Length: 297
Image (cartoon, rainbow, N blue to C red):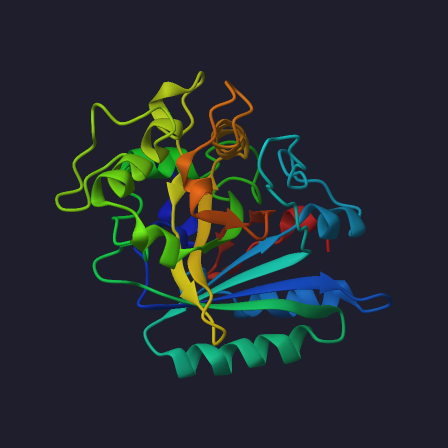
């Protein structure tokens, strides 16, 4: 790929940070959305803050972004909720206090036009594991393949270098999962926790088999950048984020996980479930700031 790295929100490509904070906003009636978005664009560096816009906001601005659509309501055997939001920010860093203060600044800056509906604190566990203890994102593409999977490398200025992201908050039943035998845990994931080796004889419901990216037609490669989360009520799980050059790859994986292809539901649903589901378009960068040309402000 010949994509100029200066065009991308680099935080998408970089590894998982030690701390993360996810902000989900809705639109307020009567607010000056254009002014707020321009202010946000001047603050987003694409590295410490990754930002994305939902289909409802793009439509409200009378703009169009090819490939952006609302998260689908799936007619499946398991609950896969669609929770549309207008605006999304992923704050990245090493200091949770710093992220909190930056989140408050963004909320205040956007407050006349957008309401903060959901804020989720997240963190890196061990070397990049899910709270179940299994490594997350093992099959992520790397190098040029990651760029190909995660970013748009075509189209006009304002589109090239952008990315689409699917975001879901999954809540785990960790007590249930820990009560299972190690064999059942490994079979649910499709890998051995001890050495992360894929199990050749895992059942068809194993998560690894359900989401094997090369098994789709066309192949469904995404760049996963997920982080564990927890709250003060004892709930915990995974904030799943899959970046792509479009949304089709994630959607194909999600439909198969939900059993829509062959009536086999991903074993992930035996101990976890998604609470949210949203799509966003993450604009490219230009001159070190968010390029919002496509929004026609």
